[in-house]
Image (cartoon, rainbow, N blue to C red):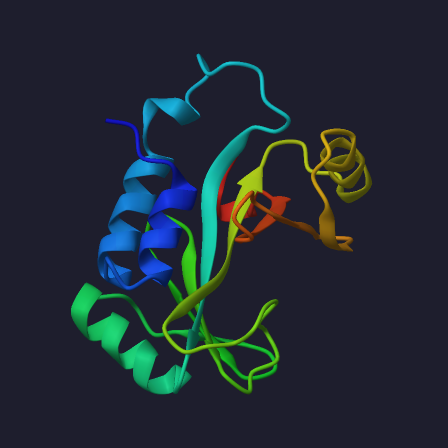
Amino acid sequence: MEIALDDVLKQLQEGRISRRQALGVITALAASPAFSESSPPTLFKARTLDHINITVSDAGRSEAFYRTVLGLPAGFPIPPKARGVAFPGGGFLSLCPLDGQCSLGDPQTGRIDHFGVGIEDFDADRVARDLEAADIEVVLKTPGSVFAHDPDGVVVQLSPLRPETGA
């Protein structure tokens, strides 16, 4: 049974599944055959789930929770006030406090604000052009990322692959 990512995020936002359940499903989706070389032609080739940005009431407390529950190493700062908690195989949780100035939407605790995907051959100008050519509105473009809404308004951040994740 195929589960669409937007359905998972909608269930999370409606409180029908927990953050832990959503993270598990998203991880499974990222590892599914849908991301293999045999996939039909697409705009871009996603290779990593780079990060998930979660709005939290207290970044330090949330970091301690994920470190304790998941056995993750010490976190790292994400200026100005967020904390990152890395997974050993790549990717990280970005824990953004309500006043952390890192939310792209209406900040609410317990909400996934956006998620980032590492794509092959990233070039911000080309990615923005290709999205707009496909009638997908670009929300924000920086030299290192392009942000767009999915059909249900979830923000997706497209970025280059991080060096530690390889090609």
